[in-house]
Image (cartoon, rainbow, N blue to C red; front, side, top):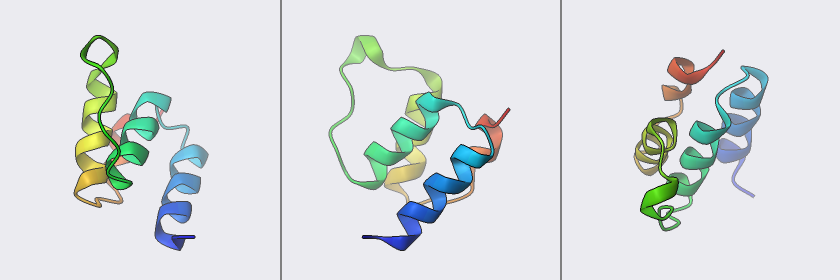
Length: 64
């Protein structure tokens, strides 16, 4: 298991990060295909972009 991935997801969940952002980040980090167009949200798109770049601190903008 990738410890960096796990630790970042735990931090995002502890910070009450928007679930759409978390799902996008996970998909981008793991290089999964994006969702279909009608299910995209701003939070998902931001998370996906950050995940693809392996950006570990972008979630703070999406935390409650």
